[in-house]
Image (cartoon, rainbow, N blue to C red; front, side, top):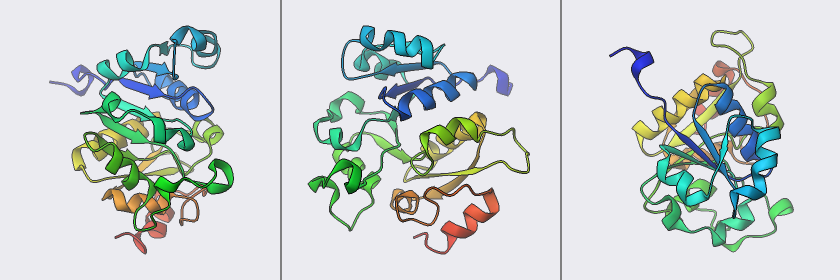
Length: 218
């Protein structure tokens, strides 16, 4: 079977604030089937979707997740405490969230410094497979800094997770959107992408990114 005959994973984006629509838009432009959901009736985000994410389908969250191969969790982190784990049970979930107390306030769930924030997300979403990426770049940069494969100024994005197959699948999406994916085996290494980490907010090419994380990777 040729690569062109392999169906693309279907992507559901949960969150219609700043981050969600941008990720949905670049995924649509990369050729993926994308749905987007907020916390309630999809009619409430239908206009936003048509303007900001043409080509993405607004749906009820449960329906979008049920049909998706990849679920992008792009909600404000302070809302995670009320997020229903059952919604994404059995799903590959991409965690784009950051714990940043000056913005979110102190969140007791994320104060355990033994773990990175995505490890804590994994503990709560125990029936899901968590992969961390997109959290270490500004949402506006996700669209602006895309480059074709082989471009000398193509930026790298880190992709971390415990499940190698899930990391590879998400890395393929990152590559197709327009970035060089740097795979880090182990969700614990996702803390390198977090605020204060060596690559947070940095626009790095693959070699520089790999050097920055290799020193500290577990």
